[in-house]
Image 1: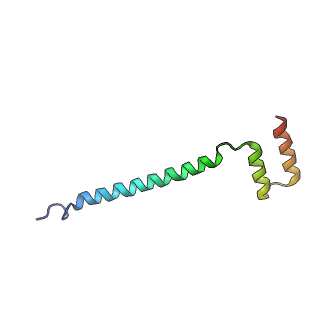
Image 2 (image 1 turned 45 degrees about the horizontal axis):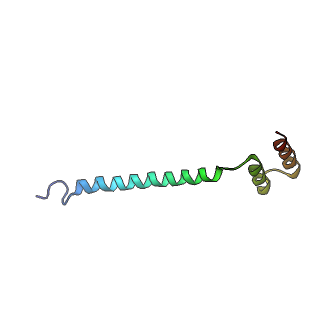
Image 3 (image 1 turned 180 degrees about the vertical axis):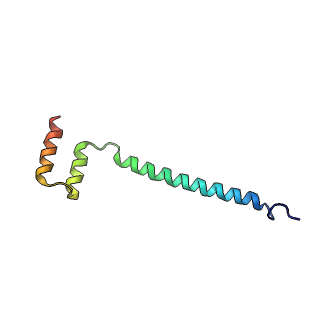
Length: 72
């Protein structure tokens, strides 16, 4: 008889689950690192400019908020 599930079948199954789990954790950490790098060092004015560039706010609103940011 070969033992449990043939040539190390039980251990191989555990090994593959560990590999899959490690890969999932690695992908999650990579995504978190990329998200945090995008927001580090951004000022309020940088965020405002991006919103204006995307068309989320109009020129009047951009100027009003910019003045508030620079005055504070």
